[in-house]
Length: 142
Image (tube, rainbow, N blue to C red; front, side):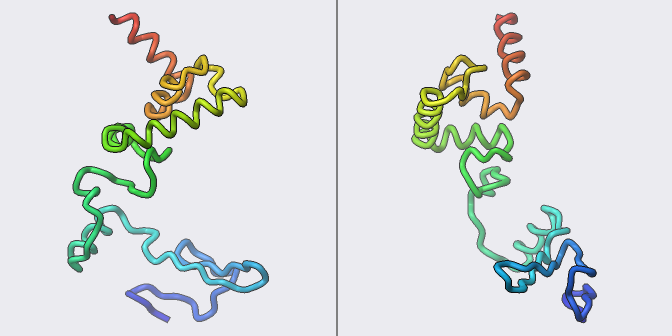
């Protein structure tokens, strides 16, 4: 069978799985998982969107690469800084949650339970060790 220039086996089972299609058993029922664009690059996606004149979220025009969540752990520092500027209320709520975690557990001990410091560490995308080293370095340069 051929779909969009790709050849597929007529039988899909655990012996001919690839990244684009998989046969799974979920709750006792066979399910086929299709991922037809798994190999696409960002350019492939944008060429398709523009070529088909599809509508898309305008946040991409503002430089966002991911828009699935605010302050996404997989987002770049630049994106997290944009989120911080655009959504100060969300930052405030996250800090409230951090404060509760610090009071109720050992969370943040290595950052002295300082809510702002913990949040700044999160934004930095660095390990705690690297974040603290950078922080000390900045103090030496002042």
